[in-house]
Length: 444
Image (cartoon, rainbow, N blue to C red; front, side, top):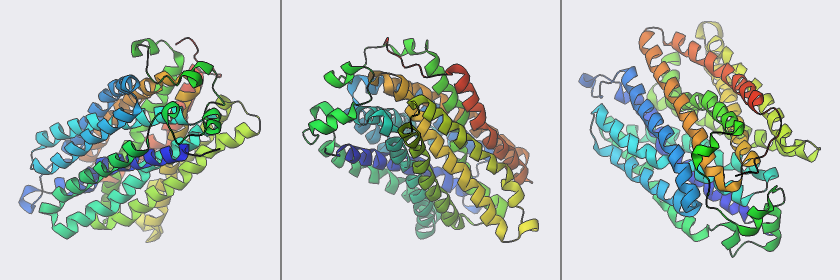
């Protein structure tokens, strides 16, 4: 049997890497954006910075629901290529808008329109190219691109600021990250086609891809276009379970992405260039945990667990690990732990980020477990919209907390870490209440 499906997974990994590299730029520029204008910065407040991240998150949320529907209509090949082209162009354009907040918000909003297509297209591609038993692992591998993108940004963006100087470095950070993604298009058009049209796919691998299909029509026709209005999808409890899972937990990842550098600077007095290594380590560790966490359902399935039970059992176990971040501020107290405080606090955040990525990989896979392939991108888009709404709430909350506790930012982060700790268990309980047992949808 050929194994070309893993080449497709690699392409998704790199598109997600570019996706998160481009969006992560602003988190490492926050210190410059919020530096008083008299000292050479933009003079933004914490709330204004949260306005920028919130607008991006909000537009991203609104766009994903339409991006999923659009990709179900035109297919993954053109859909993902178009998305990457749009976000790369506006990522570069961000370097030429000066210091006006509203200009950054406008460009970042168009940037979000492009980025919105990545996950609906990627999840749909995994549903097309992998059997159910391998989808969590494939999702975890491509989703690890979010960590690798953040890792590259952790090294690249502060280096640009140091190398070119703050006044030019922020511009080059946008230009370099935006232009790099366009190279991916060459490989995407060279290697990607749907399974039923791909010349490099053997018959044995094609049959294996469809081994877990509950609807044999999908594997026989290879139909990738939706014939269902996405409004109809809201009538299914399965969609609301995915909606709840994304709404409750996606905002936590947005918090880590956009505010982690600020936390390290304010909690431990690091300089902007000093956050490179800690954030690089955090996202690097998260890759390892993400892939391992996504392999647990496969292990349980091999031991006789039904797919849905294996998935939900795994997600419950994963939801326990974020409780560790409750101790972040305790361990981060230098008066108690001295130089070990940084290491211990970073270790708890590593666990939280790792757990999120493992949770996310399994959560995304519940869509293809329950919905027909032709609706996967639409459902993913709706759920990602929910996650974006949660992200807006978290971003605005953190911005107001940081301004409210301007003299004691540790208090603001204590509140946020408490929210981070309990969100996953709350999400799991809501999902289990909505879909207590496996109920695949067969009437769409």
